[in-house]
Image 1 (tube, rainbow, N blue to C red):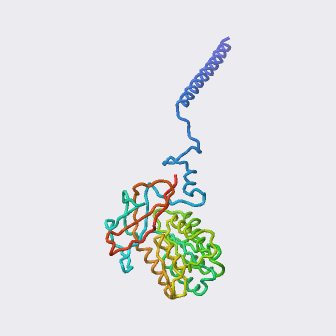
Image 2: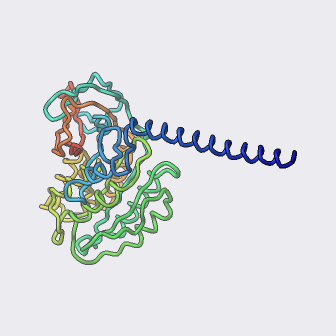
Length: 348
């Protein structure tokens, strides 16, 4: 009788414990439901936005432009970065000027704030070497190849700078992609063989859009394109101005070296001047073969003797429009400034 009573009490206790646990769990579940109904709904990945209030997918498409294949220059935190060169009236580079020696104008209005200003002699380089390999440059092609290789050997620092080699005739061809290995770059130059027509504008457009704009930048970087050609284009699908625009979007200074051996400037040389001037670069016309190497040496020195300024525009609008840049030396009679003519505003 005693054991029967004990078993009965034990079974009753178990049943009451189970009931108590069920009631407690149900009450906690209802409390969780009530709390959830008062909290804001969690965002789905599609609704996630960045700090600027823009969908990351939309931001990416905005950087690429309205037609999906034309990237826009990134202007971070309403800040514009410009690298520029200063020379005296004899063409000698001046490297010891201060911020107070210049006036910075963005889209016809003085910059609202100068964030930083300093002489930049040691920025990492990203250099695109574009070599015309069409029939029109056959006469001194070998010497130009060797001069270009010497330039790369003297300029590209292992672990710091990078360069690529692009040859072009009817189409551009990358014979060596971005690398800091000068031996590979030299092989890329020697692979080039002259022949075919000339699509100069297409090559410059390609270098800007498909190479430099897609090349990552880890901090401030100086971008330059060195273009060897006679300037005569007969096959391009894009115009000269479209090619210049793409170089500007890539924030690349273009240095041009003419391969014209006629002894007088022709229509192609004017093209080379226009490209260099619009991007803040410089045009060289080495009518003697030995002057080609001198032109490369001048470019190398200039890339290490420039200024860099970062400023906030007075009224930057995210409308994708071209905005002019004007950097003026206050002593206009003594100094001349070379910088890119402008940039394209970002698009929201």
